[in-house]
Image 1 (cartoon, rainbow, N blue to C red):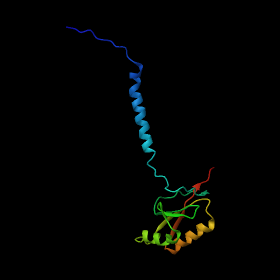
Image 2: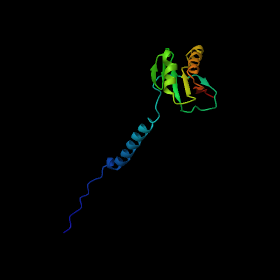
Image 3: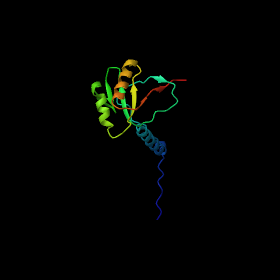
Image 4: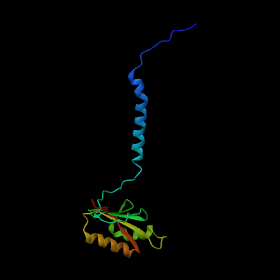
Length: 135
């Protein structure tokens, strides 16, 4: 016995549904993949320079904000404790590497004072992080 095939009219939305699913999956993937780079925990806009050397992400990151706050690897510490904290954090290394990221609006004398504190704490290698100047 043969049953008659029911021909229901095909809806246009049914043909587009798999494409829509793929587009949403790609959108979710790129939203998650875009968050892999960790943003800075503190809002700092470093000064511009024409340095050709890209900064390596090794060592302790010291950040200076315009409102006299200093942070070590994202943790705000009092300026008076900076040298002690850096010494304690890098106690096992004979030549601790420090990356100093100061806001562009911070006075140069304050930056030099922090650099002197780091030098007194035994830091032999210090990199001042900047952004590249626009062409």
